View 1 (cartoon, rainbow, N blue to C red):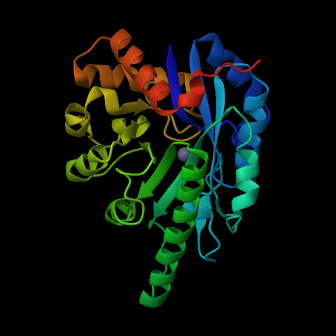
View 2 (cartoon, rainbow, N blue to C red; view 1 turned 30 degrees about the vertical axis):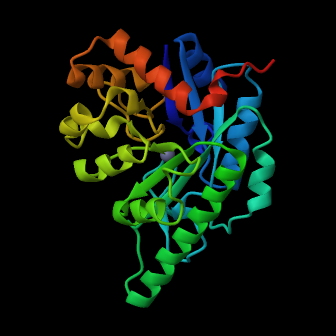
Length: 283
Ligand SMILES: [Zn+2]
């Protein structure tokens, strides 16, 4: 059994067939957590999860690229055209309401993303301040609900580490979580691991060489994910899906010099340890 700890079947790219994708995923003994990035996609992730007694879970959060900053452009879910994102203010109570579902296992993906940034120094300061503020509000929600956090971080590790070390004193608080799609340095990885966090790896390990980091990361802190529909791992092509998490597991097993079975067992245990609600059975 495997768990894809970061999927987006709640996105438009699966609008017509997410039920079929889920069916073949579960048939292959793979569970998944669908991750929200805004209120709409969070709600959708929860709604999908509610329809399955086991194996399909949700996470809710407002991703930093969807904040109301007036400058962000991202790629559409499936097509290679640039579209302006729908921007959103974080509404604490609205998100808290979604968390009533027992199939909701985490807060995220939330964090910092400096990939698209304003050009002037003053605007850049405001932009970073806003991201930090919304992140902190959501960390507060995670603490209130006693839920783990799925962090997204792009070109902003130093600032994220600072937030986690100062504002939230993560070691002494109840905040636990994973740095999803980790691509930082070993030094940064070490700091996250010291805080008790997990590192999530996906198809990006076939594009960037993260072998040294994977080798050094303790096995019990590794989570596997697809980030589908993005980052399709070879040999597959086209739209990614949760079942392909097996190719991530195969690759990490190879780097760690373990059997596929052992790696699967350990990473599944890791996911169930971090996301405690995966252990609930809801009928
Ligand atoms: Zn994602």
